[in-house]
Image (cartoon, rainbow, N blue to C red; front, side):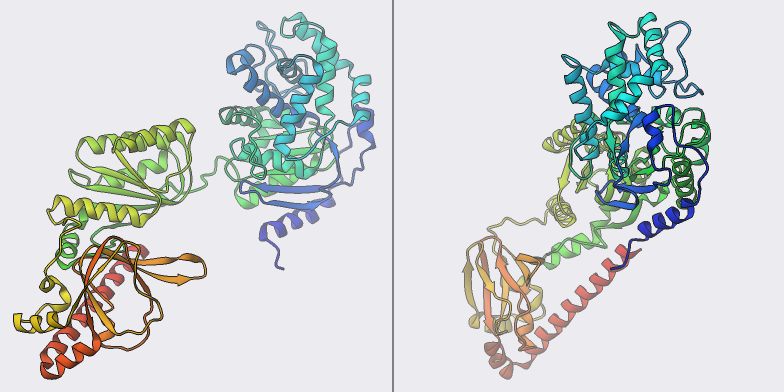
Length: 610
């Protein structure tokens, strides 16, 4: 089986940097010095739930400082931005992870990524006692990792026995009024969170959960609130790599965090999370291979966060009007002519990629170019990968203003955004300000019905059209039409009845004078049939029976109570033998209708492909 190109690229990076043996394994925590310096793994987890693994991805190691952003997110969830911000800042310190970096006036640690800030953050986790707080912290990390995690007791003991500097930091925080109560339980809890065992693939999925707005792409769990994910990523961007943070942002450009056991995570929001494990550290305490791999990935695949991921101008995939592309509803001659002449009042924009402030602005500007009273704009969002609240707010405002001026916005397969914005859009839909659709054909059909209604061409469902109004018999004189009518059988079908079955003999033509029917084909992938078209009163079906005896190629079902005039092909042949102009006229009308439909199909293909 052929390997994924991304997996092959990761294998090549692993081969390239396996020989990079500079740096030293951390020994200031004695137990960390026991790590195999040659262990090396790279994992990438995508936001749609796929994992790529290369190297020693199953080797467990302690999470260390990579726990800090996740604990910070839990504290924000527990207490909120203001309460946490009163205790720890968000400014980069430009100093080592274990620096004593407190603000001169407030005594706050400068950010939650240095040890002073992380110890403070740990103290803010809510719980009745240490055991409950630890359980909540590990539970939160497990939801991020999608795996059961445990504490390495030997590393915890080693940290506890040698962590005098962290205890000193704790007492300074206590002296500044940042920590409250006994220092030792807080520092011990901090040592414990750093001693949680993870693998490289655990780290990649933790990073991917951040990349996915806080939703684990494999388990569907949400460890922290979405609004706190961007705060966590912001602090990771400016402070996650300590004194190397500026160079990291310059060279790699992704929010990241390292740990002295050799782990590194990097996050590309909306796309994937990266985990790298290699115990050899540089002078900043970052994994040498981890930094090298992330720099290479960013450089070679254009992953820098400040590099535009998509050109805003490409948000509109294609644009067409109802005069060019219609719904699957085949209407009578008068309605068809009206829609062809007036369909320019309905503009359809097929959108793609992420909808954010810049891209939705471009789409709406295009939609506004010819929007006026009685006009409709359809935004087809089937190919939209994501939409944020800013874009939804603009859509809601646009819909309201359009409705006020007598126009209407239709949205097809709109999904995404916060629950609050989704409710707001739904309220607008309930009020008729915006129309929501699950399929583009439904949107086009509704626009057509509205146009026909405003144009006075919508007929009542119970109206029965005169037989002579159908295009199939256009050109016949009254005597010729009377001959056909005398041979026709008036048939009434209830809703749901099957009028023609796929595979049956072609022996009759049906002239639809009331109601509407659906044409569908049997497919293995569509148990209830795949709809090809809906035919309205004024249209004939099964007409090829007059020129071809091949079996029926589709089913025809009554969607409402239907009235048809059924004329047998044999009866038409008998009449035509005495009146050859009747066959000639019917054949010409069939050919004309097929030519019109073929031309229409060509117009639609051209519009959709442009």
